[in-house]
Image 1 (cartoon, rainbow, N blue to C red):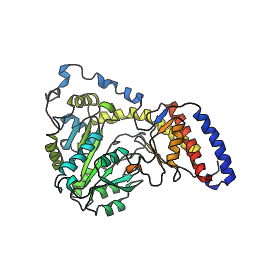
Image 2: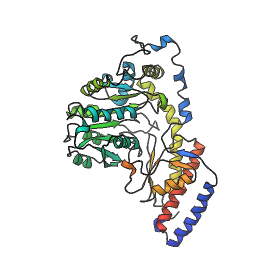
Image 3: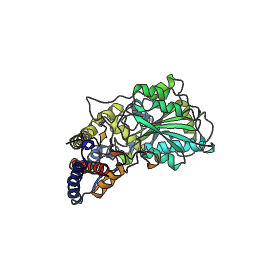
Image 4: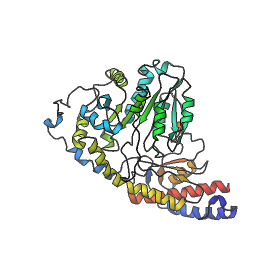
Length: 426
């Protein structure tokens, strides 16, 4: 196929006519395919079935130390659950707070707590300060942006490079005392799939922000979500780097089993310095008696320890790998060499990031929806749903069955080509 950028007007019009016919054929199929969110598929949920029966009797509800998980207590969660997470997120187990099924909930709580109470050693409640800004690597995770927007926090875009956020930009922006933090998805980032380099992690850990309130929100959602055993990204643990740099309180680390066990009933955790954890617990005492300890114990009994969790993730990888390979195969076959698309080839995580010609992303998503394929809204990977160049599309291949995913990718590729030709011919 000839590069679209090299085609004459007549060749482009002929190509548009051919693509329109192909698109119309898909539209006649009355498809109903959804790639909007990175949800585990039914097959992934089924492999965790044993968790439903791991606790059956009253005596199963006690920890090895005799604590009765049916009752009140332990606002910060079970020690055994903390020990299961500690090696995964690179935090000592006694510097972890366990939460419910969603790390998003812990992140929202952390941000709301900063607004209402401020941070340990900071300048008081953020809500009482003249302006609060947060750095947002883009393209990024839409729910991070939604948290900031809901709390009235101004978001500032930072380019996300192949090795993490553009640190030259970050280090310039943190000279502003109004900048209170940065969102990070450091491994297999949503949506690009990039993993932060050791150099980037060290630069983040060594920052000297103008504001004493500054915190890194380290959403390590895909810490062990590798797709391939023989090739995987490695992420440097940030908390030890913060300690080496004299910034032990700089980072909050979040993770969960939402894409490991059951998303609707997983467990989550927050790790940080001892001082930060004690400060957070002192405020949590007014908020809750503790999250679901029965569910924490259920996870410990099912997975046993961190090694058990990592071993279990190979089952997820076996399910997800063919889906990511379908994405790569279809994109390469249909779009390579046309000069209209670039995409990522992640080694893990849940997403593929696709960039189309400037001004075309919304049109691609609209065309796909009209043909029965629902994608993440164009612009969702940027704060305020505003992709300045209207180029980025997040592909979430995990949920559809393989046969449906193949069809959805075929439709997507036709839509990319059609929208691109439309723009070129004017």
